[in-house]
Image (cartoon, rainbow, N blue to C red; front, side, top):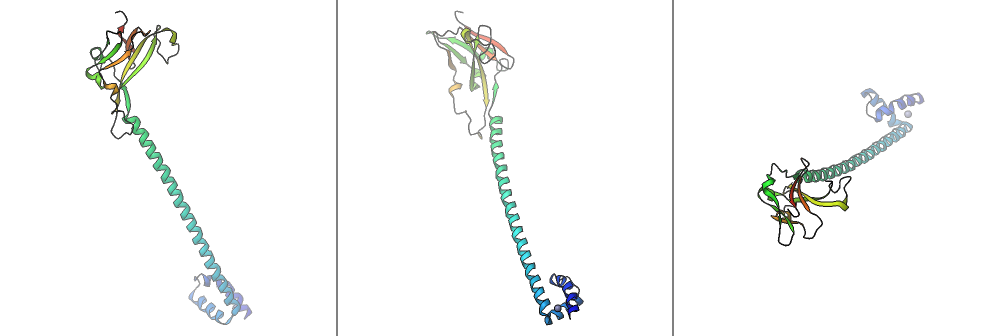
Length: 218
Ligand SMILES: [Zn+2]
């Protein structure tokens, strides 16, 4: 009997896993029906098996949950990147500023300065120049340096230069300024009467060329 138990013990793991041959299965079944030692050993094995499977299921569930969380986090990050990127991209693509260059927009005819009776100097726009949304002013010193440039001397400022820019906007962009018509008017005061500025230029920054529009006393 004892010797038979040893044989059965060897077969028990296979029997528990249900992978032994039909012959072995019969032998084990027959043996454990009459041997409590081997039967209890089989019961233990079955319990362990169940515990292992449960553990595995627990682990699988945890892994699955973690994967889900990772997926959600990745999804949220991706969505955030897409939305931010799309919005910024949209802003730059649809809200680009373009200098109105002097030749193309025929600014020699469409942009000029007008001095009123009080001595104020106005920028007057007509034709295509009306399309501009932005007036970029820079101060010019007597050496021709622009404000913001190296060597610019504020003490020796003599004139003002303006550049007209067109803003290409799109309705999808939240911050479009198309509703702001301040810059679309035909006349804009550029130099107030009594100012120390005595010259007024149009500056085409695409060709780095200055065009004198007004000079005090001329
Ligand atoms: Zn036995």
